Length: 445
Image (cartoon, rainbow, N blue to C red; front, side, top):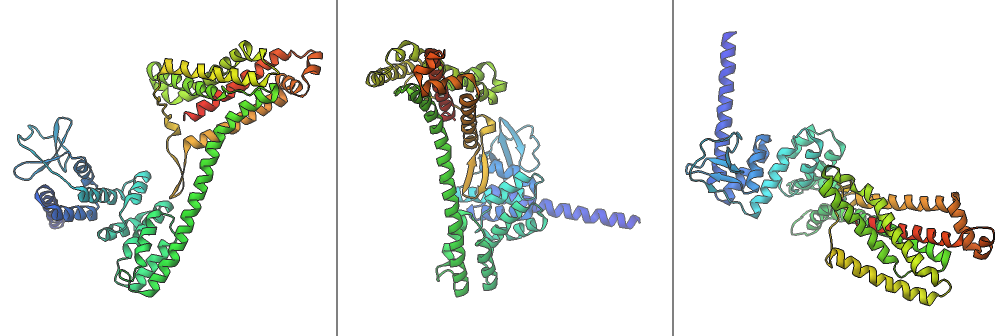
């Protein structure tokens, strides 16, 4: 029994010594080798599957790796020096350290090596990003990808790894393997797959006629999926931008439908809503930084109220005296628009201002590889639908809506039965202006 324990200890010591020697050789290659030697070392690190190398590779890509006169590597960060592989602080730090430089080719290899090592991470998102960033032309990573495929249980990541594996198999000497790889790539909707298949159409690159024919068929399938993704993306962009125009048109329709007023300052009311959002954002940044991600919820009523108050002031001071005179109303509202523009320039300046997205509106929904639905656009579409529903409820289910519809149909008769037409005009104009302010708030996002 004692003999077995001694034998196991000896084997473990030999394995540890071999691993230490291999690590030392790779570190020496990264420290003093030429570009070719460093590239071979990076490929060996990627194939090792050892996640201990990730911090060193990230530091190497960031330009934080230093070497002493003996070739030992360190990571210099925030005024401290750390051991390259162990990550422990070195005290006292070495006196003379030189930077380890990498070119663009090595940076790409570093990124690929990091992705290969991250394929074994426990976090799903880390593995997903790693699979997405793998270079399909780097056949040296084929064993790494095969090991990852054997262990991966997530369906989406497996699909990505299978496509990467197929891309690497395009360089296989066996035509049957290349044919299977080309068929597998035909199931992809990744724009990068198109370039791989285009190369296979060249007889100088692909000698097998069956593989070239399958590559042509797979290319048609991929291009059809890419075209479908672009088409859906255009539709989504049109709907998201049109939803903002819907809000603007909705407010204008209320004022024009009720009073017959062509409001040339309606665009400036949208502007006021956008700047009100900007002001609320700045207030949250300075007074409530911990709640900044929720500033948009406070900006919505502020934008509505700011534009509604300006619209109410316009109606009470100018427009109410010009009913039935469309040309004079048009000229008056155009003049008001110039005043509002100059007022905003005086307060905020002529330069554009920046309105930031809340964190919960960042990112998007990945529908296809070339189709991402941004969260901010999805929220804007939902917001426009909610405003449309709210306006419909106001006009059909409230006393104000009843008065507005009555005045629109027959102003004289509505006045005869006791409807305060002047007050209804003011409220309706304020409602239309407030909706324009909401459009400005949405436009700022």
